[in-house]
Length: 358
Image (cartoon, rainbow, N blue to C red; front, top):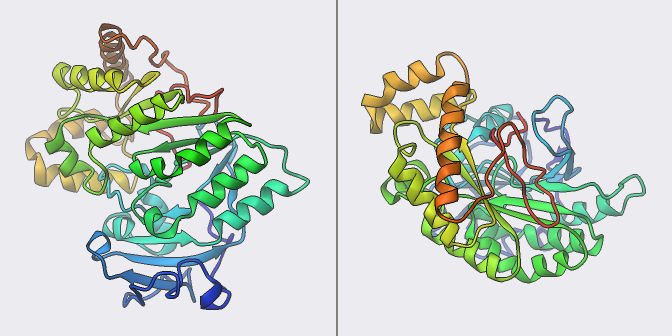
């Protein structure tokens, strides 16, 4: 991930989104700036939801990212208004991106978030550029664009307005129930272009959720949003990810999760067993040793020195999800070896590997 497209020069505070004037309970934060973000505006907020968190407001130089050709993803362009994520999922594959900012992939990733405060205006400018040809844009592919910070900064509405006004196809992958705030904009966009919506729900067990995804809405709340979006006429996919070896890969867990996804009105389910790239691997290993020490040996054997589970394990889990989907009347599951297009008319197709730009 490259960071040369970021700038820390700001207009006067009164004209700046996220300023003290716009956010009365904001206060400058004490932590020192990362070396690569000199002059960024640093915020903390006096509210329980943001306790212990620091936000670095920057003005990006560009917002539509071209995905490197070598990346193993099925889309070419993304928009990522944030770096770092308040969801604090212990397995998050994007953790390593924080190390490029001289921040760590663990606690810093969860609590020190970079906010591109001019994301909306940049999206409109770049979509209007003569060189832009209206290619599909994927969002939520690195960190969640509907993470908790979005309730404060409201970066998504102007991005969606720009995509709607230019009839540019797009997709969103999220765990955030805040997406319902923008349902009117999503409906408007769907009238003029393809809008793909997908939710990430790997399991429904609440004790596992509280431990492994502590900053996210509960699985049940996410399922409620899937139902609301489906009732609004959207073809909503669910990425059943990640499936955690030894924790959520049992027949009972898979069956309960697929049943809940089907009952929520999802159009399809895509299983994705856990993969652990550098950054995420170390953070997850520390969590596993604290919470489930008896599983450490099994994980060491499964992952050895790599990031991915054995193909035999992946195929077996995928087959069990497919059978559960058929039992619960949700026949559309991931064909083996396929990827999502993330933008479809109007759906997100399937994946068998976690979306990543790394």
